[in-house]
Amino acid sequence: MLFLLAVATLGAEETLRITPFISDNRVLVSFELNDAYNEAIREAIASGLRTTFTYHLELRTPAWIDRTIATTIVATTDQYDNLTRRHTLTRTVDGRVEEVRVTEDDAVVKTWLTTWIRVPVADTARLDPARDYYVRVTTRTRPLGGSLLGLTKTITGQVKFTFIP
Image 1 (spheres, rainbow, N blue to C red):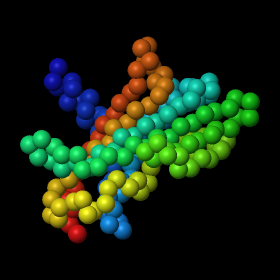
Image 2 (image 1 turned 120 degrees about the vertical axis):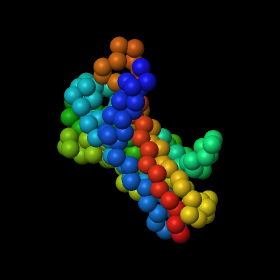
Image 3 (image 1 turned 135 degrees about the vertical axis):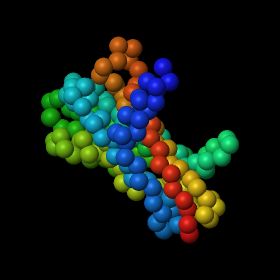
Image 4 (image 1 turned 90 degrees about the horizontal axis):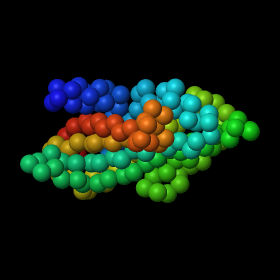
């Protein structure tokens, strides 16, 4: 049982690519959820179901009990209109609408739902120099096409880095 859990975790980490970096005294995170825009998601979108990819970002420091430094929640929602055949894409950061785009291009929809670039997570003033940190990203997708119970699919990945000012 433990082996299966380890394999499932390894597979989940392979589909979520996370890149943290420091710029302008802020910790920024870019990430991409590979293979998430699958046939079940395309069918849910085509049926007109509001589809949302939610990403919970945590900046943490490893210790005996890990300490959370900062969190950010970002989401992208696609509402497809069957009559006009247009996608209305909405991006939110911590509940605030950051951008809305209308498109007919499926490639744009895929990129918007699965890729975020330079998401600010914390100011570097909150970090200790030469200390190890890690960014954990947890994803949830609604609706999940293959679930009989209507449960969301969750994928978690993390990447470590050392803060050197």
